[in-house]
Image (cartoon, rainbow, N blue to C red):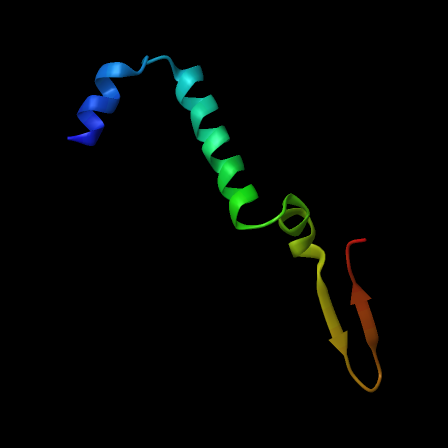
Length: 59
């Protein structure tokens, strides 16, 4: 029911749907966590051992 109302009252151009998808994705990222966490998360790891002490992080 919701999707039929959505399809009836929204335009069917691809750029509108693309913009709406990007906006919802960005708002979800902002709502859940900060953008820096998303950018820095692949680079955040620490390996501590007797021989090695490697730490990567984002400022």
